[in-house]
Image 1 (cartoon, helix red, strand yellow):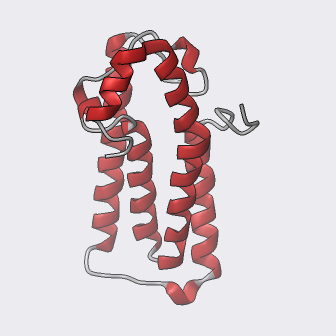
Image 2 (cartoon, helix red, strand yellow; image 1 turned 135 degrees about the vertical axis):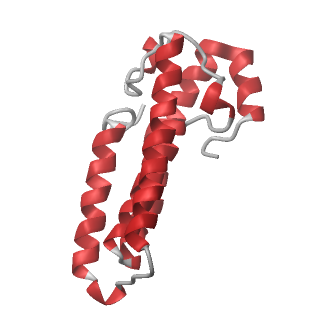
Length: 153
């Protein structure tokens, strides 16, 4: 296992990326933009992200399994219902939507450069180790699940 795998809590990464987006927006003011109702659109997208993430947490709680992704060995069950019918990682999709909303609120196109960084980091250091563990623990059921539901959306 790589030293970064499962080490940084996803919520901490969300905050780190959000701060980096803010810093980039401040550094590259010439890449600013605005449009009619941009604050409303930003709030709406971020709100949808919060809802999507909370639906994922709710499904985990309903199944009695851990919501702490740094310790996948505490997973009690394979959750495939509710929002997990559309995404294998709704909490991370929700975080990405929150960052998209934040980028729109900042009104700076350069800040969006951090979105691929978030996705790459999550894929490599969070999701892939989780998927390895889930495949080992839940076997064929998990293999069938990943064939029918995408990693993000």
